[in-house]
Each structure stands twice: as structure tokens, then as C-alpha cells.
Length: 602
Picture 1: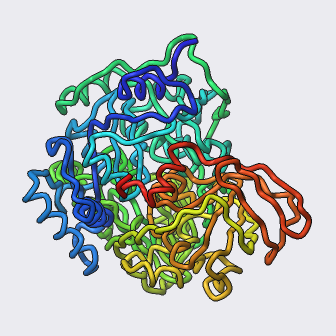
Picture 2 (picture 1 turned 135 degrees about the vertical axis):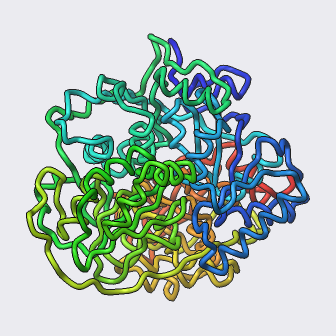
Picture 3 (picture 1 turned 30 degrees about the horizontal axis):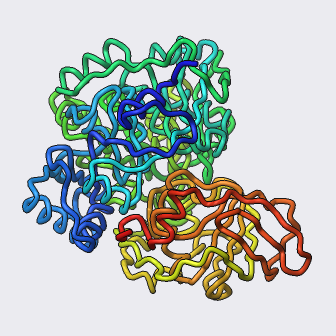
């Protein structure tokens, strides 16, 4: 049986043939750290006396808050700059834009290559047929020091986009249709490969849009086979080009068709990126603000689509339109081609290149009660502010800004709706991981708390407004502060308690604090039906005991006591003696757990 794309790339970078489920050491071609995670990477390296494997393959990218409008961001950026000067590391500073886009456009990695970043959307590199992964601070520090990092080879799924969409459909509408198909966890643990004529026809910009939202489906990454134009773009950028194509007899763990025949403009309703409906179902909903940008829709093609709608029009009274190009090259091209003038004449605020609202940056957040149409990739409660966020294409976003209500480009009302905005956006910042535990028991016994919910994301676990907290002792009080019904968890939980929860726990951001807050509270074990891919890595690498087990129908209640044997995965309920099977610790997980974390000496 032949190999899938992800198997080929990992095999080439592990030095041996691999199969799904194998845990191998993977050589990393490009290693990135951003401004909110970079300072923690530096601290981890310095704390453990580690050097840099290859400075020429190692980069800082300041894209979350390029203006340094938050003191913590500014301080973290300066920590990184000083470290970079001493180690000969290149900094893509505040004037350059989103790191994953720079990696593509600057040739840091090409088709068939590997990249890691403190960005949970590093899998955007699948757009060019490269393997990109978002990782936590300890993973990145290890990769910087050793040039490689362990990885579990994912299963592969063939995804065929079946049919022809309507002329009004955009790449964002295609990926929203995929989200509707898969839900928040339908690709959990998978590497996907897009097939079909609609996939082949996508430009690089469109492939970036679609690949960028694999994370929101639970996926490790989704790939496109590089087209001639994509290969030419990467070659012109100076990237090394490797052949990226699955073998004809490659074995897939799953195959599915996403029906896109006649697909029109789509939109995700507030709270869940996968709550997708046709725009027509929510058309006429008043909006306070519109955001165009992010790693999903901040490229030149997106800017052009917005300019075509805004030209000779004005943003509706009372509506705020914020536009942030993805990179300085896109920003400059918009200036040279007159797009910035179109934006400004229409009444838009144009920011310098970067991520903007997604990471509580200086542009893109909304206030309490504010309704926003965004071209971003996430609309979890609180992710982009205190208001409600709809996810849509640049075309729908621009049309809604002009109309003052949600509208498509083809069906904008003649007169804009008028209303007054309200609210202020919260601020955010960076954070540092906590110290690992010293004692490592292999049997854990404790009182359980049952949070019977799926898809609890990292903003629900540890909201981004607390990212400026760097002391482990302070983190616990914010645990579940954005999870309705569980805001009082820090006052109820005690040392030694065990958390039992549903599937896809920890989906969303790559933030380490969503793991460390449980350590701060003294929680001894987290048992979930499944974990978000990055969250699982962060917990294992921090030496935090987590176990995968389906206790959905176990009958466990808050306060019950259980005993868990980590090597075997056996879970025993004290009051009944009933047992359940969890996934035993792998050799890698147990080794990291026993030594107190990935970066601790063996």
C-alpha cells in the first residue's frame, strides 16, 4: 500500500517509513515563534540552558500585536529582539505581517517541507503542500534547540469537493461548507487531502483560506496538491521544492464527499465556526462592525474583492469597518494599486499588517452587545471580544458594511440601515507556562468533576484577556471563567481532583495557559473522550497527566471517587468497583510525565 501526503512528508523528515499512529522524531525545516509566545520560548530555552540548532532556520514573527499597544506584548517583543540579536536569529518585526504567510511568501518552507510555530493555524502551510503545525511554547523551544520534535503520525482522510458552486461562491464559502459537513471535531486527529475540480481550480489565496480552517474542524492539517502556479510562487520566493503527491494506492482511514453543487454565500452564526447557514437565513441582521483580515482572508485577492464592493460607496452610518492586510507586501500592493484610497474614501480603518483581532490585538475586537461580521476563522464566545461574531467571506463582509445589515454582494439593499454602536473591546497579552510537578505517581485517585460537554475550547477554559498573567499561582482563578455554568469551578475544585469531560476538549488556540490553569488548581488528572490536537501535546509536554477515555455513559457524578492506573488505562469507580478502559500512557507520554515535562532533564 502506498503513502498519503502526510506520510510521505513525515517519512522524508523522520528518515524512515512511517504509518498512522507511529511516534517519530521529525526534522523541522522552519521554526517560528510569535510575539505572544516568543518570550516564553526564550524563557524555556534560557531556563534549561539550551542553545539554537540552526539560527538560519529559526525566526520570530511579530504579528499578534504589531503596534505593541499592550505593555505585555511590547515587553515580550523586546525580550525576543534581544535574544535574537545575541543568537543571530532573524526577526520579522512589527512591519512585516502574519508569520505563516511570510513563511510561504518569503520561501522559508516550500512544498514537502515542515514548519512549526506558536500559531495554531500553522497548518495553513497545507495550502502549498507543506506540513505546518501549531505547537506550544515547550514544543517550539525543543525544536529550536534540537532541530526536530516528536510527532504522532496522523490518519489520513480524502476529502472530495463534489459539484460546482454558484458564481457567487468564494473559497471562504467552500470552507464554511466543509465546516458544516465535518462539525467542530469531524477531522479530529486527521490529515485531510482536498480533491475535486473545485479544489484544483483554487488559487493560492483560496487554498490559504481553506487550509487555514482545518483547526476549526479538529484536523491536524489539510493539504492541497501544489498546482503549477503554486510551485512557481514558492520557487520565485526561493523555497526548496519537493514533490508532493499521494501514491495512487495510498491507504486512507476515511473518504468523504462535501457536496458544493450550487453552493452560494455562507455564514457561520456566533459562537461556533461550524454553525453554518446560507447568508439568506440571517440577512437583514443589523451589524455594528465588520472586520476584514486574519490569516484566513487577508491576502491581496481578498483585498481586491472588498475594494470592488466599496468603490464609489460608503460604509453605512454607525458601522465600523476595519481592514488589516496579512503582510506588508499585500499592504504595499494595496497602496500602489489604489485600494487603500478606496478603503479610506469608503470610511474604513486600515491597519498595519498582522493578525489584528484574532489574538486580542489592537484592531478587530468588539464590545459587549456588538454584532460583527468577520472574515476570521473563529467566533468562539469571547474570542474576538465581548460581542457576537459572524464568520463570512470578504465579499459578504464588505456588502454588510455598506448595507449596515448582513447582506450578500448580490443583494445589498438600496438604503443602508442606521443604528448606534456600543461597547469597548477588552485587552489581552502574553503569558508564561508554570513549573512542572516534582512527584510523578502512576496511580491517581481523586474526586471527579463531570463537565459533560463537547468542544470546550481554550477561550472557555482560559480566556485570552488573561494571557498577560505569567505566574502559575494566579492562573487557576481564571479556569473556566468563560464556560457558562462553570465560572465557579476554581472555588469548588481542590488539590487532587479529577476532571472528566467530553470530546475535543481544548480545541482552539495553542495557549499553554489552558493547561497550566489546572496545574495551578492542583487538578491531578484530566480525562476526556478526546482532546484537541494542540491541547493534547501541550498537556503531555508539560507533564500534566491526561487520559483519553469515553465516560459518557459511565454514570459518574460530581463528587464520585475514582482510581486511575496510568500505565494500563484502567479506571475504577470507588463506590461500585465498576471499571472502564482508558488509553494507557504511551512510552513517550510516560517518559515525559516521569521527568516532569518535555524540557526537563531525563
